[in-house]
Image (cartoon, one colour):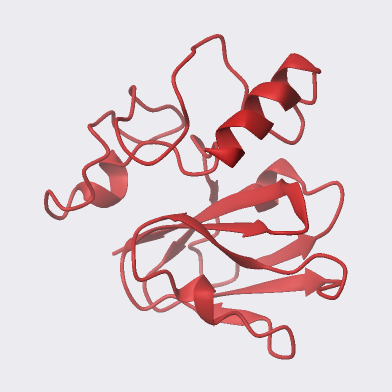
Length: 157
């Protein structure tokens, strides 16, 4: 709920670089996707409906399009801080790949926020800021210290 309010306020103030703003009045919350953009298929957001749930989930933390980092040579480092680049907000990886956050974790902690459970980002350790994704799903992240620092990792089989 807090994220929805922050997103609405940010969009109203024109802070569209940090938030996914649209003319729709639907929430970017847990379930009930309204159709998707950026290479994902529309759906109901029911993450328990089978293998296609990875692609059918509604937006997590405003992520509708994801930056493809599935190639073996792709950088999977998220530059954590302001401004969080759109490419670092919403990232596509494969099962078995890891994502590393790089930044000041004393000022902006990293934590889980929405998406599938269990969320491996919950085990984030600022002393070893790399998270390995061992299961398919979409896993949201945020900084509890800065509501604009949000995103999601979509892990494909």
